[in-house]
Length: 358
Image 1 (cartoon, rainbow, N blue to C red):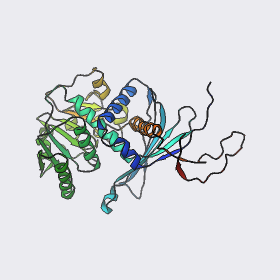
Image 2 (cartoon, one colour; image 1 turned 90 degrees about the horizontal axis):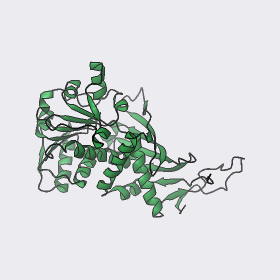
Image 3 (tube, rainbow, N blue to C red; image 1 turned 135 degrees about the horizontal axis):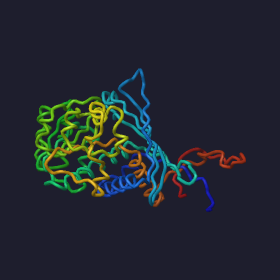
Image 4 (cartoon, rainbow, N blue to C red; image 1 turned 30 degrees about the horizontal axis):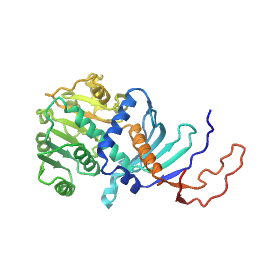
């Protein structure tokens, strides 16, 4: 057995994460596809997420997503992500997150990464991957609609464009007219020449789009009429709680992971409760990737991803490896104090971060 040693511990800030991932959308989608395939092949461990809720702050929560990934770049770890909707009232983002990577040989933490970017990137890459694979049996949509005009919507748009999507028309709706206008302005800068429309109602938005992105903070279903979807769009149901069971039952439903998605009062979970069964689920995205499931071209298709911790780990490991290969990791000297099992403490360090090659 090879000699084991305690790995140095690195802290990776948001600027470094952004530098590695920005403009790298095509490769990010490839990494996410590989993560889904590993998960489908049983080479991951992805327990249920754990929700920390607060009686005095019922709208807020912090979620722990432990996971383990095998394959060519194995890693264990945990994403710790908070959602505090009231933050937006004072001009700061709703979500914040860190990701801990653990060495699969020793169990020691390798790094702590700022993870709101990783979380947004893996969500957007998953959406772009699903959009591509779920539309291969039909003419690729050129009319997109975004319900929700926040950070996730922007990242999804970037990943769609970064993976070759082009649109003749993009529609936007948000309960905040200010957010909708700001997102439209962003799209005008990012996609000159595309027709941009801020829609007046949810129904108008849904009926206008052949590729519909739902990226809201809705806690309960608010899109309730299956007739709005009669034109058969592909729906990226990212926020998971927008669609009433009636809409779910009228669609072809693809999940990322069945057991994970049927919990926490997601729309598929509510549908299971209403029907007492799971017959409305056609399969998973991995079923589509591997060809076990053919997606019809003439029906509404809904992709509902609960969000797997293994996706965050794969991206986090990639960021870590890229920075390590360039000698750009910032290690914390002396982070692990007692490094000898016979209680011989490591030499004292300053405890401050500084660049150092491992």
